[in-house]
Image (cartoon, rainbow, N blue to C red; front, side, top):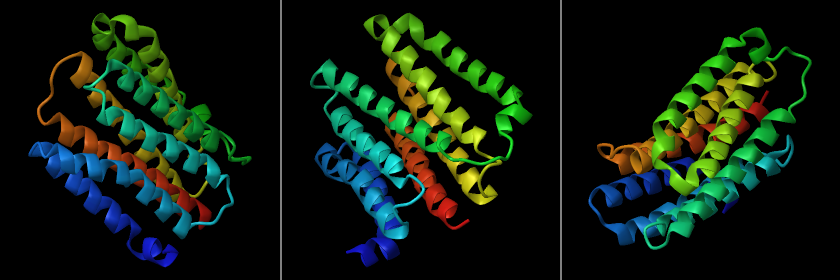
Amino acid sequence: MKSFFKSYGFILFWLLALTDIIAVSLQYFDLAFIAKPLLIPVLMCTLISQSNAGNNRWLLLAGLFFSFAGDVFLLYETSHPLFFIFGLASFLITHIFYIAFFLVIKSKAPSLLRQKPFLIFAVAVYSGGLLFLLIPNLGSLTIPVILYALVLSSMLLSSLHIYNKINAGAARLFITGAAFFVLSDSLLALNKFYTPLPLPGLLIMVTYCLAQFYIVKGFIAFQKQ
């Protein structure tokens, strides 16, 4: 089984992602209910098969597990509002584990954020602008969404922080994954709380899958340094 995921894990992941995207686009929701919950477990198996347990891999696996939980909760968000809250909380925990992973990387190399502090300002402006659009429509979710935005922004900043501390290939993969996560969550929030987007299921799912894919690829590249 390990050799299967080592050879075909990422292919299977993208086949499941494509199946989910097509199912949602054509409103074959029964098929989507099968494909989407399988995405992250396949990615977890692929990560385990293509890397070893060092370098705090467990932090990424824990983050992926809570992403899996969030995916499942959000499948049922239309049946009860609490499922959206549970999904939000699950992904919040995911980002906390990803932040922890980035911050425990030890190196004497200078932080990219120290070298280029304008990046902190840019992320803050983006997050502040997004919240400016969302807050009038959040109601009782105002505080949870603000908290989520702060943690999500911190996750992106944490990935930028380690840019000089690991090999450039892995760093670029991590930052790309973190950026796609911010984009995916932004699209989800805008579609839910601001204005309906064209093809929201497609946009959100593609960016989400790219986010998780690049973060996992980043770890594999990180271990090869």
